[in-house]
Image (tube, rainbow, N blue to C red; front, top):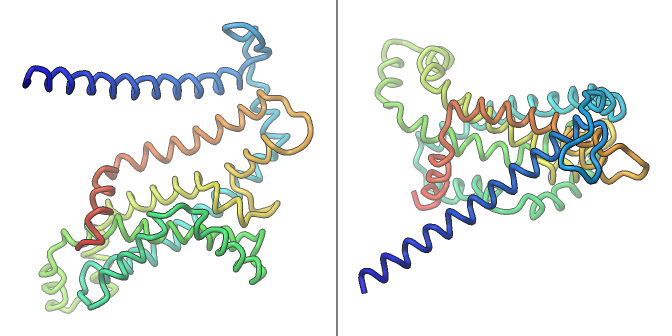
Length: 280
């Protein structure tokens, strides 16, 4: 009986690894096909392209006005990062240091935008923003992206703040440190790794956030991922290699910031913290 259970367990383990391996091979194959096609002069009915060229990247940059799109993307992204950093760190500090009757409810409300699909709250929120005249504007895109970004900063920062001994702050105040001096000289150096992790991950999330940005973005406030969508589905004939070149630019941009963010934070710790928060 025990031998049969061990055999079944081993079969399940191999099956899980086989499915995971198949998924990874399929994903790598799709990405490789896009990358190779972005350099291909012609690739029809053969295992490899007839030749390689970089002209599609120059063509995509000009055809899709990527210089303007990339500039707008990082304007939006860094504005979201700045606002969510200032408000998120402040809110995280209050939640980490203060106990009050409705604390669990407040934490749960902060977590909701991270736990439910973006379209669930994105559509009614976009409707309100259009009614306020912010539809298609820069600030409309910023505001709608702040909804998931601000709670994310709070979620990441709370454990960083909780691990700082409150007696350090108390001692600094005893020696005459004001609020500004306390933050700049005591808290900021201790919180800097957590702040970098949170803000870099917010940056990656905002670059990759399609649903919310698509609902509110206009012709002059599209991020790179939304422009890529329009490049694929807009009317007219476009070279597939140019679209794939644009996709590679998007992937490389997102991957760069994601790798940088992972130097400062362990995603499994964030997931564990998210599960613990409602019950704390």
